[in-house]
Image (cartoon, rainbow, N blue to C red; front, top):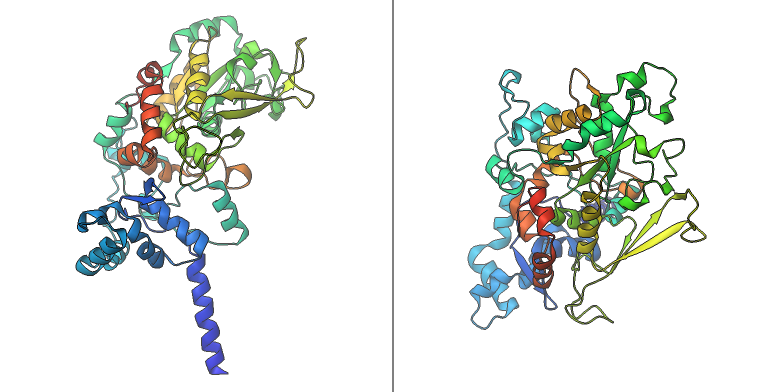
Length: 466
């Protein structure tokens, strides 16, 4: 009986190891791997082996060594198996990886509050102002399906240690100040709309931080003239901040005045609403779309995403041909124009995921009515300064103490499962290496993006070029 109990314990331990989620290790494994003529980050290969073959982390890394391109440097004939064997035996590769995982870096030294600068972009100060302790670690963002499986299986996701980007690295990506387009129209908006009826709220593509903006505005900005009337119910935005644009936050600009959002759209005079349009670095935005595509439909898979152009595995497409995207927009129709379709759902065609970003935001920059366009990254590194300017534009008043959103503003269930919190976002979006090397891993995708990214949009919003 004792022997049977020991055997059962061994089986349980094995199952626990197999349930260990990918992403629990933080060190770069071995750079780029090649599998079936496709190159991608080796970390992704390890994650795939753990998920689909049920292997432990160490087993997955050992199996993935033969695909590592670094290993080819150790082999005269380019054979992956020989190179992997050589690297493993000569350099104790797997043992090195184990040591890297076990090493603990020294805790971050937090500054006293008297030394805080409320406008500093220094990542440690940003986190301290937000009330986030970087020493506690974070759960990285993951694909929606993986997050849902973990939730259903009651698996507790392991936290990674935070490796904060440097101030210089952050500024090389986003500059030294917030970028807000449309501040020159604030006075025109205030002149046109009486204080009681002024309303603000988010608009933006999927994965552009519209939920984060809505929460920050609600916690920090008030329309006192509207609030003091005491005649508006919670659904009517008594503080002057709506959950989304009344025509639907993800919809194109020409939806305005022609459509009504199912949530928060009824009873709102759309001309009184000042939309705050969220924009995100197109590279990191595409990475977010790969994890959570929402209502955008296009051919892609984990090993090849964003899949801007077809490779030889995309059947029915010529190699190098752009992969089209269809986006479903759904609203309640208003006005006398024909209903788009009987179910009130409209699919709009875009030539590629990149063209969706280019076209959607170019149409908003061309809008002639008052609107603000704000970078997602400025809600991380310039939150108080950015929200203050938005609030002032609409004639609102800031609360005495600025409050941050620490956890994922989207929540962790439903279509938002796997979303990142404040610390995970700061670590991810301040990492220049991740932006430049870990997203457009396919050379054809990289060249397509470099050639087709809208240069004016990139310059207007201060995003680093490819």
